[in-house]
Amino acid sequence: MESRLNILLTFVRGYRQYSKAWLKDAVTYEKIKYFPVTKDHVDPPITPSKVLMVHRVKPWKGNPYWEKNILKNLGFEEKKKDPVFVKNTPEICAMLWRVKHLVKIIPLKLPKDLPNTVDDLTEYYIHENGTVYNTGKLDPVRYQATMEAKNSIKKMNHYTIREQLRLKWIKGILI
Image (cartoon, rainbow, N blue to C red):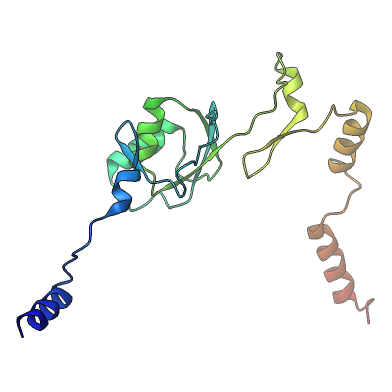
């Protein structure tokens, strides 16, 4: 009778009779305990990114003033949702930690051959996943032709087309 009562109380209380054998397999990194899947598991070497791309994903309004101050110090503006590029330093990471629920942080994957001059930076494109691509130099003749076509007076935009069609409709030409 006593053994049945002991089993019943153990089951009801959720009391464990066995030891946690997996606790001895913990690997400690400074203040963090990590439990690898296998005993011979080795983490790959990580080189942290030097630059972080930060997107604001939550609205500015409704947050306390100290979070707004941190966002302003990071370079965000109230009305714009443009990404901000910041250095990966402990001070910046501490600021990002305080507003981690308001932002999305993406480390940039920089190419190995970055240019030395500012003029060569026009060749690069930053994708939204954080990868930096080399697009090659722009052809100045093609760029000039594109800008002329874009800013041409003869080009009809959708407002002009709508107005011309409305006037023809009023005159009865389109019937």
